[in-house]
Image 1 (spheres, rainbow, N blue to C red):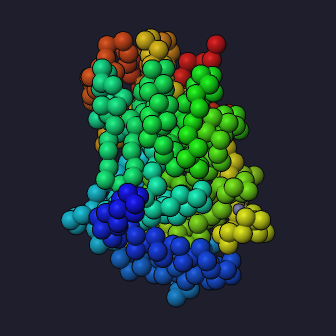
Image 2 (cartoon, rainbow, N blue to C red):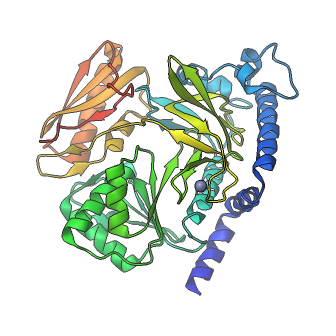
Amino acid sequence: MIRHLKYYAHRQARPLRYRFLKTLLVNETLSAEQLQQHQRQQFSAMVRFAIEHTDFYRDSYQGIDGPDYDATQLPVLTKQTVVEQRDAMVAGGPDQTGIKLGYTGGSTGKPLAFYYTDEKIERMRAGMMRSYRWAGWRQGDKVLNFWGARHDIKRHSKPFDRLRRYAAAEQTLGAYEFSEADLLSWARHIRSWRPTLLQGYASILAELAQYILASNIRMPSTIKGVFSTAEVLYDWQRAAIEAAFSCTVFNQYGCREVPNIGLQCTHGNFHVFSDLVKLESMPVDGEQRLLVTSLTNRVMPMIRYELGDLGRLKAGQCSCGSPFPMMELDVCRKNDLVVTPGGRSIYPSYFVHLLDAHDGIDQFQFVQTAPGNIVLRLSARQEAVDIVGRALKSRIQADLGCDMALQVERVESIPRSRSGKHRFVIGLPAE
Ligand SMILES: [Zn+2]
């Protein structure tokens, strides 16, 4: 009864989200051939829209004829181009009401900004709701998120003071920093709140799972799935999470600029949401680089956008029965936790987002060199290095207290790790 009331209230508050969800659920009933045809139409429609409404695509697609477009004939959109052409990529220009600027670390070490609207967020949430249903979640069921907004961080506040409660059956635990005491209170909260789904970064879910297993805490049987997002999910992390919560881990693939790209099903295959994106794999120097086109983003069209991840499309049909095509994902982003001298762990995203809205930075990397010391390597002009250094020192002081010192170093460039991926945050080596 309460569940239905919550569902009703949420529907009334979010009409757009539920309208999008309805369409997405219909798409899931189409055949593989129907989805392919739908994708072809949507792709050409997006290219036409981008040419007609943005300066950037009109100029860079000159001489390419429609009305149907062959993706392989169109240029690749790099992160560098998005940085340089950001404003020219917005349909109708960026000076419209309702258009906001979002930030992401990208995967190359270069901070990237993109434009979005509330409608784009509603589309993203509808896509997430469809994903949740793969685990057996239904509208009104509880979802517990593990990620934190920056303002959640208060050194002396208890985790439950930071708990944000929504009218929706959804709660978020601030998780940029946590101690063993936090892990215990989160485990207790899961036991009393009895959510259907848990969702968050792989690294924090794995830490929590290991703590729960070591402390032998029983988790409620209401949990149907754990959604891992934004980071590479290692096999040992998956094993710990599945053992602690006695359910399947669903690995999500997407990024802030283009969310809901794919989801791993209960049969272990990654499916591409081909009604929301067109995913391609392009061979470069012996690697298969992933390109994505959003089929729904008419604010700032992203066409053949190079994600910075490696992978390939996979032929055949999955035995789970989903009509969505399959993909394989190779090495992904890796970032480390930072540990304070007092034993608190700080989630890497905290550091990555410190540089949001700072201009003029080519690359950055945080390296923990000692328990109370972090070095920020910046590739930027000296002026930008000075400004960022001053701003971040006082921010870290305010957020984390005085036991964490920051040193800023200006560097020419930052080498990639052996896997070829940029690491934004490198913690102390394991003992
Ligand atoms: Zn499947």
